Length: 181
Image (cartoon, rainbow, N blue to C red; front, side, top):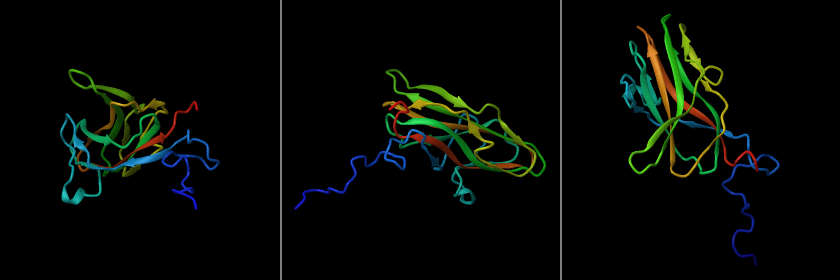
C-alpha cells in the first residue's frame, strides 16, 4: 500500500506549459481590489455605486492619482508587462488615463520607492471608450520579484466636464519562473 499522495505532481504550485516545462511566457493576473487614494485626490473608492470597480474618477479632475496594490507575487517570478482595464465616459469631452508600475524596497530608514516602467504616452479620448491591452499597456519588461520588495500600480487620470473614468483592474503578465531556466 502506498503512503502519502503518490499522484501529487512534483511541480504543484508552479506554472507549467502544456508539455510540463516552466512557464516563461506567463499569464495575466487581474488586480481589482479597491485602490488607495494617491497624492492627488479625485478618485472615488468604495462608494456604493462604485462597488464593482477599483476606483472612479469623476468629471473635472486633473492629474488625480490612485494606487492599486499588487499582492501575491512569488519571489523569483518575472513581471513581463501589463495593462489597465477601464471604461471612459467622454460625452465628447477629453479624458486621459496613464499608469506606471512602481516598487518599494525595505530599507533601514524608510522604504525606497522607484518606478519600474510607465506607459509610453497617456491614452486620451474624446469618445466613450473601453480601455484594454491595446490602449492601456506598459512596455514589455523583465522585472524579477525579490524578497523585501512590494509593488503597486500608480494610475493617473484627467477628466473634463461630463466625463468620468471607471478603473476595473490592473492586469500584469507574470511568469512564475525566471526566463533563463
